Length: 80
Image (cartoon, rainbow, N blue to C red; front, side, top):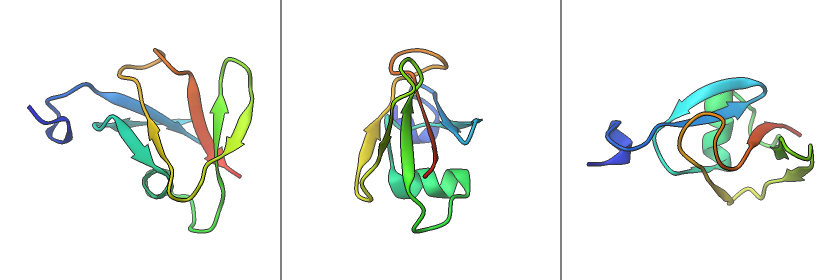
């Protein structure tokens, strides 16, 4: 059972206030850009929805996601 083929948990990635389905447990900054239509060279920010704290993600960073919508780490991504 492979997550990439829809057999694993379903993840929801929020980019610029739009939810996107994702079928892997991690997502990279380039994948966030592609999914959200964010131009190359634009900073990608991770926003903690509990505290509203923002941090800029490194270009080679991967973020571990939690399955489901509204569970686990409450974060979203947006343009910097």
